[in-house]
Image 1 (cartoon, rainbow, N blue to C red):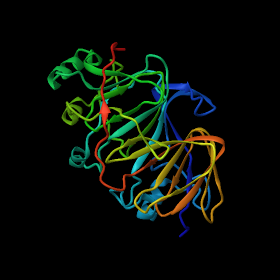
Image 2: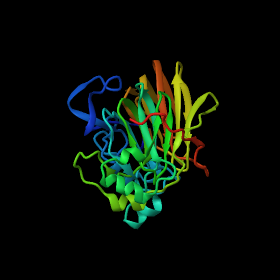
Image 3: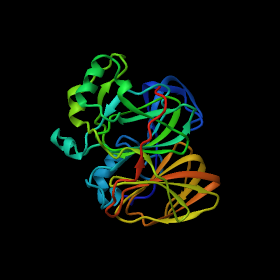
Image 4: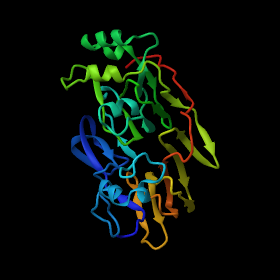
Length: 328
């Protein structure tokens, strides 16, 4: 069995009606059909480098187990974190995701807590997190039926550099005019509660059952540690942002893999015994948990986000939820 090494993954582009055709500045391409998401670490993403080229992340997770996914992962045969770029050109449907307990009841391995980092945000960009204070589930259900549910959502202004934490059970949606980096538990369980009358299938009963009127969703209060921007620490993931002008040496632990996502510029990942990997904006490299160390070297300059699992008990992040003065 080939030894594990840092894996360059090929993105998967997902067409969505609310997406965009111009994916710059993340990807230098203009496409015919609107793209809403670029999936970077899903089970179907394929390896682009080395002896394991062509294999999927899902196949390798089953084959290598903890050596790839880490001891802190809940499952030994499933990659624990899904990272995406989101390109909303219009409002997404209003959604909610179940928490772990609710997911287990329907036979799913885990729920879906996620976070969004705003790489770009045009003036007036907004997301909705939760219902306005005092709104009941019955009132929200009635508003869905009357095609006015967005009036009861808690809309929040978004600016470049904001990190937003979306705890499972939070009713939410994303407006247009942004480029977001999403980090989440590896789950695709989504209940669509409202779609502005666009005619797509809704999951109202299941979604309302999964909805929590109070969660820890909101803008994460920034933290800086040892020169790194710690964007969020939670029980489910840790996300950092690093701007490099010179090489840094990093050590992994057997507890968690590292996901390196280039968000500006290009760089090289080096590890002992393997050919260096060059990756550029929009690409992700997964450093398996069993790879003890690596060097990250910028090509001129590199801004990279690094995602991993917490290796000890972590509380939910400190957040603030200031509603917008104007609804969309």
